[in-house]
Length: 362
Image 1: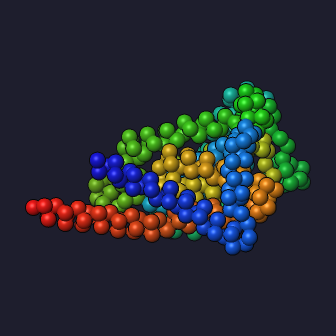
Image 2: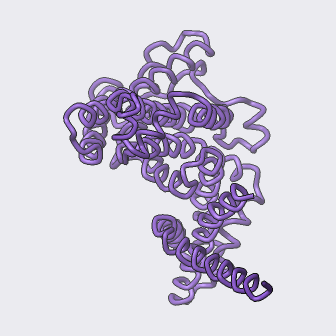
Image 3: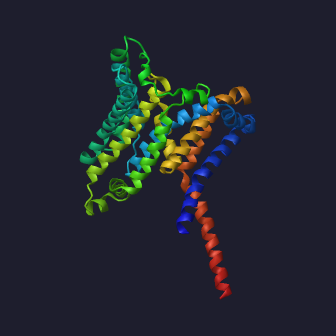
């Protein structure tokens, strides 16, 4: 019974955060003379009226699921992996590089190799921050921020000087590196939804099993809760710091690889870090670190991002308003202690009233 109440209490926080985010956006639209009902109808309903846009929302949710899980895993271990975007970019460029280098390999082998390399490069890139934190006590936040911009500049250099002939984009990968399926494309009216979506579902389940049913997952969570007590219990804090960052980067790198091969089929010079990195952090926070919560949060973000494109034409509202709504949701998730304060206060009042009533009866 207590576990059920605890679960419901935890579920209320993201739901209230979403509602407050939409409410804040509505107030802002009204202040600028826009109709929030029409805006939200255009943003959300329009997406579900077309199989193509549903497919595009799920395609975007795929990459966000991986980056969200990556951030959540490091966060469970007590670290703030702000380098998710750089790790995803490292996975993206390395997967495309492998796909272009070996175009004649059988499809299953080439896809496995490309995604595997993307996963591994992302993991190694994140492990740099983990190693420095474990053995030198450096801040993983500062190191991962620096690695973000290192990944960005190295990627752009590789695109211009190695992967293409003085161009700003690489050639498209061959058919053997294509992650799409004809039946999936037909079902969603030629959207870019690909097999990566199903890989994401499998990874969500594996993540839950790893974190809740294995010794390694227990140790990562234990180190996150209390590193000193974990060390006293015989756990290696250094090993778990590096392992958690390695796995976090692996998830982000895999997400970047799937995003590159499945969505674009190539890579181009980046003006900034990919949105899937920072949006993945927001997804993880909204999902409260729960893999299933992260999966559904990523779908919500996918719908909001795709639906934002309908707001200017159908409701006359700038699509930047959608970003404001998303930012407001993130704010209320980050400030969840405010929501919890009122929930706990109301629960305390009920308990006091119940105790008084029982005392009166006696």
